[in-house]
Length: 507
Image (tube, rainbow, N blue to C red; front, side, top):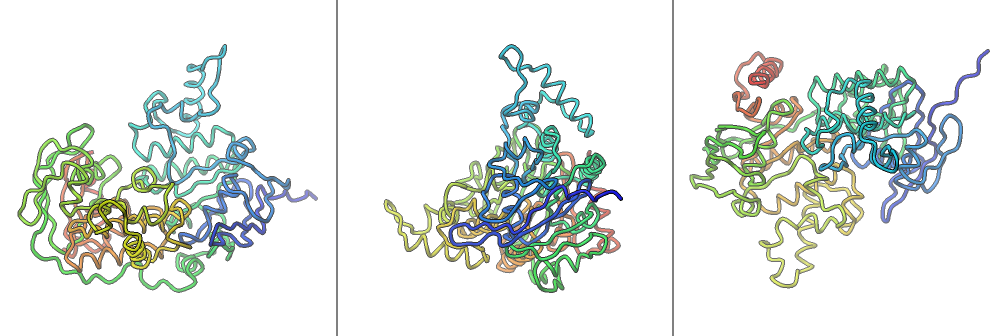
């Protein structure tokens, strides 16, 4: 009789504490070769901390990690990579001014006679890409690629280490449906070769579709491990939040009024960009913006806010022409922008929650002209933490130590302190759990009830349909149409079909 193989990975009794918070307490998970093991939990549940303990980013306080039965203790990420554990982080960390192949082989560039062997690096990159079905020029500068393609490159980089265990943290947060299918094909290819995949996502349908097993965490502790085939969405939510989730979206009570914001014939200045976009937003309205990756949704928001230059067009608020030629002017004009990539363009990771909360408003809230008033700083930071339910040990906590969802809440609070008339949100719930999403939806709708104009880009069709009043659809850098919610398109399924048809109009 053949003896059963030891699990590929066993993590047992893992503890990890930070000042003021016990991040992990007796956490555990077991991953078998050739399977997809999903890790789920609300933001702050400890998922990323557990993976960082595995990957050598954090040193665990207690517990054991075994690979194929052997005790391991990785001291840093390179140590983990050299021993077959690779991790693709949700927040990409790439050298944007270098080319693709240099990013793939960073830290292990092939040498010939003491010089970098570019030809070998090119061949090796092409070989990895061909094995994964990735069609990207290895010589292309990585900063010119879309977020989705950069994410695929990070997966290829992880695969190039011949990883036995591959951790994917929110890998589909910026992918289109076709790109998700391609990713799932890569995952199936890797599991057939015996790789164990640890898959972190808040998207329930993906979890139930791709997983063999699911481990659920709550408050830093292991709650349950179940076969995916025996789970339902309702059961996962109940285990994650320890309560029934009867509603995915809050009730909509906002009543859009007269037109407050007008955008006329707006075009971005630098290609690739968008052209001749015109729309209006009513006071108290939530306007969604949909479109495929590459439709220039983000570029549109960035140009309205002055982060990108416009070639032509007008932005009019309450009948007055706005000079939104730079972000600081836009802020003074009562506009605010929550950017898509919080790590790259939203956070000041080396500073605390207080700094990250007040920085956008430091010149205009009575903090003092020469010396900052500590009492005012504390008052406004306390408001951000309380109003948006930020889970943190202290306002002095470094923001980088918070979960992704709580980081996002702080940034939203930062912009709310500026009391904007127009709130521009680019993927506001990206990488956020179902409970925190509900809180952000509720906040958006309350802002609309107060008469604010909210413009929200999202790749998640259900949330656009769930909380928006109208949905503007972008396609190939052009405005393809506007879907009016409540008009009969044949129900929600009909609305989705209409939006997807418009999104492909100019592709």
